[in-house]
Every structure is written in C-alpha cells, then in structure tokens.
Amino acid sequence: MQIGLVGLQFSGKSTLFNIISGNVNEESSGVNEDARIEVVKVPDKRLDLLTEMFNPKKKVNATIEAYDFPGLRMADDGKVRLTTQFLENVKNNDALFYVIRQFEEPSVPHPMNDVNPVRDFEFLETEFLLTDHAFLENRIEKLKKEVMKSKDENLKKELPVIEKCLAWVENEKPLRNLNLEENEKKLLSGYQLLTLKPLSVAINLDENSISDSEKFVNELRSVIKDQEIKIIPFSAKIEIELASLSDEDRIEFMGDYGIEESALSKILNSSYKILGLHSFFTVGEDECRAWTIKKRFTAQEAAGVIHTDFYNKFIRAEVVHYQDFIDHGSFAKCKDAGVWSLEGKEYVVQDGDIINVRHS
Ligand SMILES: Nc1nc2c(ncn2[C@@H]2O[C@H](COP(=O)(O)OP(=O)(O)O)[C@@H](O)[C@H]2O)c(=O)[nH]1
Ligand SMILES: [Mg+2]
Image (cartoon, rainbow, N blue to C red; front, top):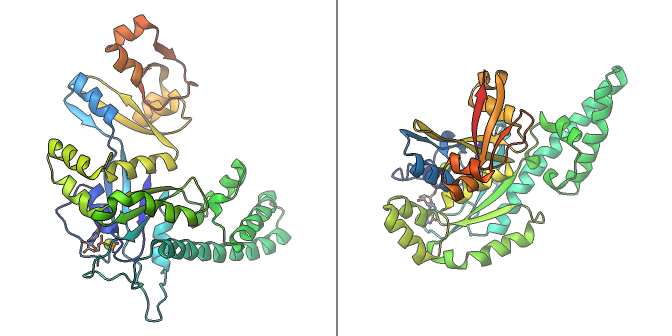
C-alpha cells in the first residue's frame, strides 16, 4: 500500500516525508528533483502495550509506503504542467495526501506568490479532474469503435459506466463523490483515475497558528464538498522539534501547544482508514507484531498475510480481542471469562484481534 504526498512546490511535502520516515535531521531544501519512497512504521499504542506485557525479542509495527513527489513547478506563463511522468507516478499510489501550505516564509516564496490554501486545493483538484476528463473522453472514443466491431459483452457494460463518469467530471465533480456500485468500481479499478483515489488533506500551518488550526480547517472544509475527506492540520516546524525530543519532553511540549496526537500518527492512521485497512496482532515471547489487512478479511485470508502456508494449511484461529486481553491480562483468564474463541476460516477478522493460527 502506497500513499503519495502531492502538492505545489514548497508546501512542505519533503519535510513531511522526512518526518514520517524518521529522517528529521535531513533538512529539505525544497528542490528535490527525484521521487523518494520509504517504508514507514505505523504507530500503534496497542502494539506498544502488548510489547510491554510480553517483553518479546522483537516488536514489528505494521508498515505502509510513503511516496514523496518532486514539487509541481510553475511554467513561465504561470501554469503548472503535469508531466506524463508525474501523472504515472500519481497513478501508482493507492491513496493521496494533498499537502497544502498555510505557512508564511519569505525565504521560500510560494510558487503562486501568496499563501492561499483554498486556491491551492482547488488547483490540485482541477488539475486531476482535467487529467481524468481527458482519459475518460479518450476511453469513450475507443470503446465506441470497439463495441461496434466486437461482441465482447464487457465492453458493452463498460461504456455506460465511463459515460456516467465523464458526465460527472464534466460538472467539475471528483469521481470519489460519485456513487458507484461495486462492479462498476471493479471495472474502473485498472484505470487508476486520479479523482477516484482516496484522499486526505494535510495543511501545513505556521507554528504560531497551530492553536487556530480549527479556523483554517473550517475555511478549507467550506470548499471541500465531500465531508468525508479528512483534513489534518499540522506544523512541520513543530513536528521536527517533537521528533528530536525524548518521550517525556515530547509529552510536555505537545501539551504546551495543545497537540493531542503527532502529525505522523494522525497521517498514518488516516491513511489506514481511507485505504480501508486495519490491523490484527500476533503476540509471543519472540515477537509482537501488527499486521495490515483489508477490512472484511477472513481468518484464513489474514493467516495468508502471515504466511501462504498458513492460508493453505489453515485449521482454525484462536482469537481474543485486544481490549479483552488488556482487561483480563492473560489468555488463560480470557478463556475463563469466555472471551477467547476458536474461529473457522470464514470468521471476519476485527480490528485489534489477537490471533494465533492453528495449521497442519
Ligand atoms: N517556516 C516554515 N518553513 C517550512 C515549513 N515547512 C516547510 N518549510 C520550509 O519550506 C521549504 C520547502 O519545504 P519542502 O518540504 O522541501 O517542500 P516541498 O517542495 O513541498 O517538498 C524548506 O526550506 C522547509 O524548511 C513550516 O511549517 N514553516
Ligand atoms: Mg519536495
């Protein structure tokens, strides 16, 4: 699973990327030409607590890939050109984060001169809408020709779906707001339409604006019609400082600024949500580990994430929910309390299940 940080030049993408990949000592100059990918640990307090209880040799967090794009620059005529290369890269991401600038910094001029998050958001949406529009128009032309020549039923089914999408995009509405049936989504999945990708917005605030973050979030919220899009306010400056502190100092510092959760944790958890993912745990003296699965994965599918052999040779799964385990303190006590269960392969794994796979 890969999340892409997209935005104008100097919005703080690379800085944010350094923060989430734990390389905060690396200062970003804002002129990276190359894209970067990094495997990032997803913070999880539940895993931390389980690790404290089991004291294993190893703790393994769930991971996600983050992708840092080179900035979008303005051409001389004031327009930003999306290169084919750039678009190909955006397409490869499973979810997108728009990084929007709300900080003033005379030494790094905003590519459109002034700081205006609403305009920047609308700019990105429009660019991606235009890209989808061009793709859909092209696809319709091709389909119409192919449908006449071929007897392929799938092509006939595709045409009205693409037409529906095109009409939607022509009204300047992103495809993620269009109600699509599961089979329609499936049909479109290979095309990697940009406005169909799950989206969150990270807004990079001045360190002294962080206490007013609600105001900035609301301003942006008023132009984003889709209420489900998560807007995450953060301050890159503050996050860099946070990362350099000891755990104790960090808690105090966060208290001073009224920050409840670090941006790192908010962003990764939000990515998890918009991608429809959640975690289950395996625990023991050797290793405590969080595994990433899609919501609605069955016990057998989850076992397959650990090892393909576990999928093929699956017998049953021993399951205790995280909260029950914490409440009772051991598997034996969970059994006594009736919250330990043995589940078959069709069992749908819940977020936070602790699982032990029995296999042949
Ligand atoms: N004052 C201030 N400067 C920032 C902030 N975030 C990023 N910068 C600076 O802005 C410049 C561009 O940041 P960068 O992360 O490279 O932007 P990118 O082009 O979106 O990747 C760098 O010099 C950063 O140090 C911030 O929150 N406050
Ligand atoms: Mg950059």
